Image (cartoon, rainbow over all chains, first blue to last red):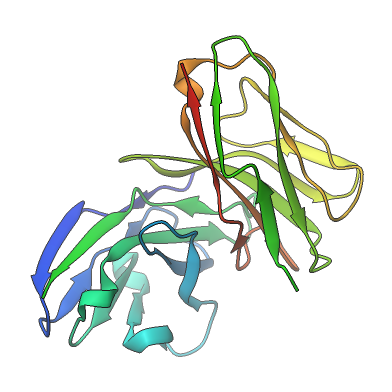
Amino acid sequence: AQSVSQHNHHVILSEAASLELGCNYSYGGTVNLFWYVQYPGQHLQLLLKYFSGDPLVKGIKGFEAEFIKSKFSFNLRKPSVQWSDTAEYFCAVNDLFGNEKLTFGTGTRLTIIP
Amino acid sequence: NAGVTQTPKFQVLKTGQSMTLQCAQDMNHEYMSWYRQDPGMGLRLIHYSVGAGITDQGEVPNGYNVSRSTTEDFPLRLLSAAPSQTSVYFCASTLGSLGGEQYFGPGTRLTVT
C-alpha cells in the first residue's frame, strides 16, 4: 500500500524566511501528487498538484513544489513566507494503476511569527 | 455553486447513540469520499463511492455505514458512537477519478462522551 511521509510535524518560521516542507511517498510507479492547505478553522483546499509534465509546479499564493521521481519526493517551497501562511499542510499521493484512492501524509503545522 | 456542504458543523453524542452526518455536492461529481482527521494522523479514508448505488470501504470503515442513492448526497452513519470516533469528519467529491483533485466540505466536529 502507498504511504506518504511528512517528516516535519511542526515548523516555526519568521516572516520573510524561506520555506521547504518535505514529502516522500513509497510507490514507485506513476503517481498524481497534491499539496493541500488547511487554514485555522477552515476546510482543506488545494494548493497545487502534479499530474505530468514539468516537475516544477506552481500553485496559489506563491507556493511551488518539485517532483523528483528518483527520490520519491514532492517538497513544497515558498521563497518568503507571510504570517497568513500559518496553516497545516498536507501532502497526498495516488498511484494511477492501483486502487486510485488518495493517501494523505500526517500533515505539517506551519507557524509564522510576525 | 455551493460546492460541498456538510451538516451539522458540530455535534456531541453520548456513547451508544447513532447519528447521520450529511454531505451534499452540487457539482455533479461522480466520486465522493468520507475522511476523518485526527491529530498527528492526517486524513484517513472511511468510505467512498464511485457513483450512485456504489460504495466501498476505505482504510477505517468500522463503525460507519454509507449509502449513495443519488449523485448529490453521501450520508455517513455512525451506528453506535464510541469515544474513539471523536474526530473531525470531512466529506469530499471528485470529478473524473477517485484520486483526482478533492473538493472538501467544511467538516463536522464530532465529540463522543
